[in-house]
Length: 64
Ligand SMILES: [Zn+2]
Image 1 (spheres, rainbow, N blue to C red):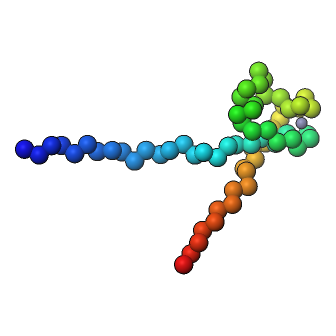
Image 2: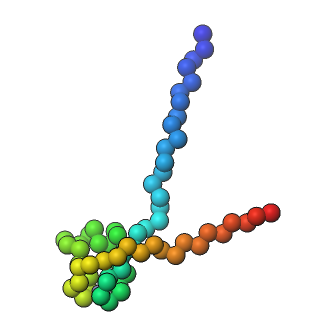
Image 3: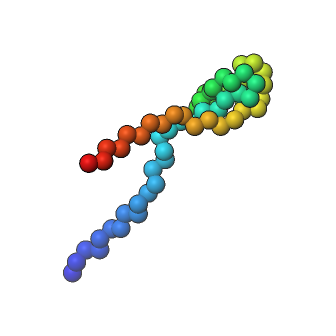
C-alpha cells in the first residue's frame, strides 16, 4: 500500500511591501503600520484625507 501524498496548496504569501499614505494637504507620508497605531487616522497637520501611495519599488531583473 502506498501512502497518500499530502497535497500542499500553493498559498499566496502576503506581500511584504508596506503601504504608504500621503496626506492630501501637506503631503506627509505615513506608513500604514503607523496609521493603525494611531487612535484615529489623522495627519500631523490635522487633515484626515489620505491617498494611497505606492512605495517606489525598484525591481531589478537581469536578463541574460
Ligand atoms: Zn497633513
